[in-house]
Structures are given as structure tokens and as C-alpha cells.
Length: 463
Image (tube, rainbow, N blue to C red; front, side, top):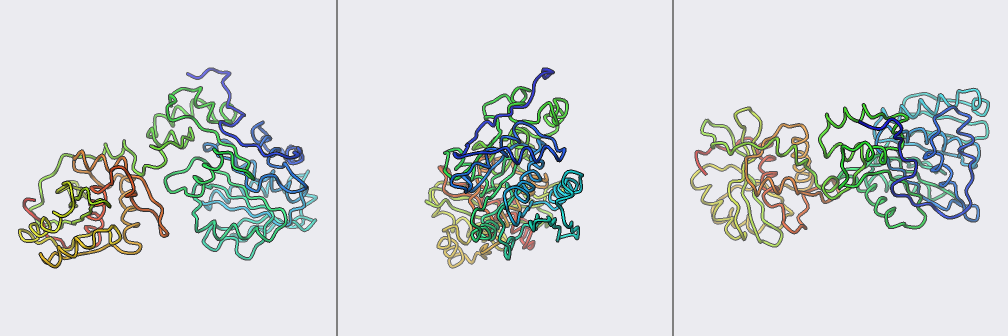
């Protein structure tokens, strides 16, 4: 049980404060709005306002804390300060989820309709998709959607990006140039800890931990080695602990969430195992079943193949509906080297009607597959363009939803729980540049895709 006096840490676990002259103007203005004002929020507002020669010392401001700690209260305070104190003509706000954007919009609107602030407001437009607050001095606060064209046509002085864990490089390529025409812009990133897809936030975090210039950075987080059940760890990672977050609420989360989810969502842990690996180990373990008998009743089988980038190993995988109707991923064959793959596929094709065999067309095994086709008439189904990233995401989603099974195999399970993501232009794929390439995982990923999209493979009796 947590001690009654235990309160959340107001000093971030990791923080980088810019140099320059700070002021408390935003804090004092925010106090007039009646919004909650915690010391940690006040520090972010104060320290991010530091200037050098009348320009922001920090071009980018990053605040990362677990969910429900009160990051959203910072937005209206900073936006009001920008509009009424800092001379900013346009403040843009964006969130990944529409409902998050709407909650923050309502908070901003309520503040602007309150007695202390309403005298400075000229007009509030509430049309969905066009929410704007215009101030009497000509400044504007506007909510924008987050798309590949976000920010085009605008030149904001302040850009506030909520739920930054969902920012992609493509979206940032559209957003960042929008501030380049302004003389003294500032970009804010507010977020909880990210996932393997959080390329922008992960890059910001790496810069924050190496104390990069032009960056103001706050992050509340536990360590991967901390006791995740200890209330003192909960308080250290959550500045609102004892204020808006309470021990009994976190205790319920602890019991309901997987350890990996609890570490990220409540304790803000960015470790190798919780951020870079894709599949939850506990989920994979729960979805592992004994190796099923091959289907003999006409159920279609999807086939997939892969080889390590350095040709140190190869694998053949299969996928078919199990007894419960959900697809089961089976590692059919895995051996050192890769030269054996064409002949083994030919053997399977000679004994059984394989149907098409799926593989990553950019995985460096085209020559092997061409041999299988030429020498053994194996039908090929190369996954091109967006197919392979979609196949990887599909498997990850099925694991999250519990709608797939892994046939028990140490090689396959090891690949699954250790697989990490590599970003590509149209999504992510299993990273091959690892000490142990995930050959077995790639093979069953292709098999699952083949089973779902080319459901004409024949059943087999034995492998």
C-alpha cells in the first residue's frame, strides 16, 4: 500500500533546461484561468520561455510524461501566453486522435469564455474541422488535423503537437517547413512514451538524453530495472501522483495491463525490450500452442520462405486454420545456410500442391526463388511495394488482438519476442540487421499473408 503522504515527483527524471533569460508571465496568466497549476507545469512554461537576444533559446520543447498527468493543461496556458503576451500571430494545435484534439479544444474554449480572458477574445468559431479562436489583437489559435498535408498554407509562430508518439517523419516533413517563414518560431511536442513506430519522438528523446542545443526537454520515466509494483516508482514517474492520479487507480491498472503496457503507459519506460521490440512477450507466450497436425480436410495452407541477409540460415513457414478457426503459424523447416531452400521447396512441390509461396521481394533471396521456380516449377508470390510492410503490421495487429497462434518452436518464438522494427517509407518491417536475423519470423509472416490473400493453397498430409 502506498504511503498517504507520497506525492508525484515535480522534477523530471531527465530534463534539459535552455540557457537565457526566463519569465513567469505564462504562469501568472495561466493562474488567472483557474486551470490546475502544478510546480512541474509551471517549470515547463517558465523554462521554455527563456530567450537569448529576444529569441527563444529553445526552438523545440518536449514534455513526455505518462498519461493523465495533466499535459493537456499546458496547451491553453502556452497558447494564451503566445497570443496575449509573446506577440505570436498564429498558434496551431494538432493531436493524433480527433477526440484528444476536441478535449483540448473544449478546454481552450472554456478558458477563453471565462471572465478573466473573454475581454481579449473577438470571436470563437466552433465549426468541426475549422475550430478557431480569434483575439482582439489579431492573434489566432487554430486546431488542425494531422495529415500528410498538415500545416500547408499556414505560417505559425507556435506549433503544438500533442500525442507526439504518433508523429511520423512524413507528417513532420509537412509540418516543420510551415514555421520557417516566422522570425521566432517554437515547436512543442507533448506525449506519453512511444512505441516501436514513434520515429519522431524517439529521435527527440535521443537528442534530449544527449543534451542537444536548442532543445528544452522534460521526461518522467522509471528505469527498466525498477520494481514496477513499487508505489515509490509510480510516484517518481508520475508528477500528478497524489493529485489527479491515485494509488488505487494505478493498482487497478497494474492488475489489468500486461507488464510491458504498464511499463510504457504508466511508468514511461523506453527500454530496448519495451520500445524496440514489436510483439509483447507475454502475448506471444499466451498465443503459443502445441504443433498441430497438418490439415487433411482441404483447409488451405499459406506458405512463406525467407533467408538471412548473410545467407547463414533459411526457413520455410506455413499457415492454416487451427481447430478454433484461427490461423496457426508453423515453422516447417529451418536450417543453416540458404542454398538448400530451392530443392526443399521443390521436394514439397513435388509431393504436394503448394500453391504460391510468399516471400519478401526485397529480402535478397530473389535468386534462390528464381531457382525454385526454374528448376522445380514452384509458383512464386513475391510481396512487393506495400505488401510486406502491411504483412508485418498485420501479424503485429493479430498478436495484439489475440487472433493468431504460434506453433511451439524455440526458434520461432525467439524470433517473435525479439523482433524489432525497421522504418521504411511506407511503414515498418522486421529488421534484418540484427545479430540473429529473424528469418523464421519473416517466413511465417509471409505465410500468414499468403494464407489471407491467396487462400487457394492445398492441404497437405505431412511435411
